Amino acid sequence: MVETSCPDCSQPLSLRVTGGKLVESDSVVHFSVPARRWWDDIVFT
Image (cartoon, rainbow, N blue to C red):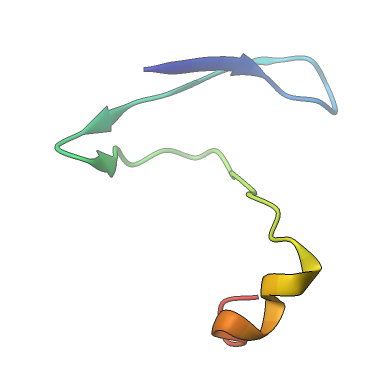
């Protein structure tokens, strides 16, 4: 379980991972990708 808060509104957020996969949630998660890796998978970025 990952527990954090929204950086915009400070509401608490809880995310669960089961079997190596994120359990369905209404939350949005963003993982930044360094510019040097943008072309590694251009469709993803």
